[in-house]
Amino acid sequence: MAAGPGSVTPPRFAASDPTSEVMELQMGPSHPASHGTIKFNLRLDGERIVDVDVEIGYLHRGFEKMCEQGTWNHVFPYADRLNYASPLLNNVGFALAVEKLAGITPPERCQYIRVIGGEISRVTDHLTCLGMAASELGAISAGFYMLEAREFLYDLVEALTGARLTVTYCRLGGVMKDLPADMKAHTGVALRQVRRVLADCDRLLSRNRIFHDRMSGIGGLSPEEAISWGLTGPLLRACGVAYDVRKANPYLVYDRLDFVVPTGTTGDNYDRFMVRMAEMEQSMRIIEQALAQIPDGPIMANDPRFVLPPKSEVYGSIEGLMNHFKLVIEGQKVPAGEVYVATEGGNGELGFYLVSDGSGRPYRVRVRPPSFYSMGALGHMLRGCMLADIIPTFGQINMIGGECDH
Amino acid sequence: MTADALRTEVAAVLPRATLVPEDTVRGEVVVVVEREAATQTLRTLRDHPTLAFDMLSDLTAVDYVDRTPRFAVVYQLYSTRQNHRLRVKVPVPADDPSAPSAVPLWKSANWGERETWDMFGIRFVGHPDLRRILMYPEFVGHPLRKDYPLHQRQPLVPERDPITRPWSPRRTV
Image (tube, rainbow over all chains, first blue to last red; front, side):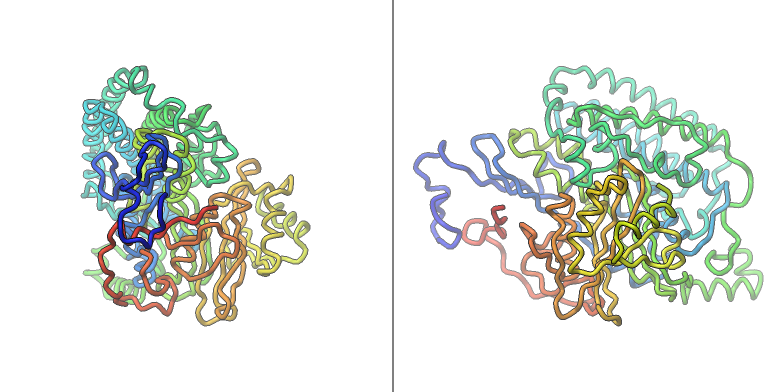
């Protein structure tokens, strides 16, 4: 650089020999090839990246501050909007954390429903990530095929929760409503369609020369580095570390379901892609097993201290009305204490650290967003790569603004 | 390692740390460490062969506004080799809100500490690049402090010209 930032004339553009110096380039925050509002402050030597400073925070909306203002149930709609590609997983993660703090266990049928909804969301999350990543590399058809597959699953989510994205499906101690009567048949049809699309996309992409050249050997990290950067989920598993919260520390009914944790070897973008492809098949297996095993029974825990009474009680009896009133106005009096509960989100370890002071409102809600820490490592992954490598690497991180910037 | 075994092991390895009673943390393993001993303790936890906390899952803080010391920096540690978790809390007083940086131990502390500085105003001594991360550089105050009003207004910031007023430059490490 010729002069410092205080000078008025633009010295960086008046340089005599443009080939010999490092060029500064700001990419974003609204770049057509990056899905997500993010800015890269690049220092380039030709097309090679010397240094990159990743700037996030464009979608910050004070999630943690807002959570401290309402009752525990008020957090569920906010939780939907963290990772909006897999809202059910956030709902389930938050519900499990509050339930541990309150000391209640949801009934078995509810746990199965949460697994089914969560795994459907995991597939939509991976489809969003891979579809967008493929279309950004020019494979527009594959991208749209994956979005088509996602539609079949969004139909299921809509039948289950009433909404495609803003689901707010979980409640403290249970879920909002039971599975629709024809869920099993519907799911069978949808999964068949998704498998057909995925087989097409696999043929289009996995052995595609151009796709290979853009993905292989780029953005890789060693397992030790990945662990030190706090990478989790598909990014860490692509490095060969088989850390999946569902296996390492089984919650809900994951210990009764048979699935494998796919891992890669090199940790580059291609491995990340393949790990996600394999995970979708495993998630679909989980959904099928859970639908076969699901028992009958209640979907809400029976604990009037925390669980809202059914509407028939609220409008039909004075006790139900009072219970409802107290819970809505004063909030659930979750006993004082603190917990950290990790679940496997779409992008990795989704953790909620909650502190309660015994009043009806959360004292502190901290979300550990998996893509926040992956984005922290992005600058390190990109150093020495070419400018064009930003897009596939950023695509495989699957940064979801709502979650990363909370 | 199970939670009970981990509790015994941590108590043996860190004689000066205080274990938080089990019922307030619902059976999780939590230790409180003085700020002066934090770096040494975290290094021990990372390098000890049977504890082996190789991942810093999350780093944040809590503002206990009515207590002394006011803040607590919270480290969520995880061991991928041993599959156990530990939470370390370091109390930080209000009149000197600072803590030693954990960046030399875990890379993930870099953004975790930047966010904690941004949200709580806790300085991390030895951090290579302590800038705001979610808020913009001109933001006044630290929004997750309990005394930051929910509807606080911020002064308008003049438009940033990329040539005469570039973004806050990254410090060279």
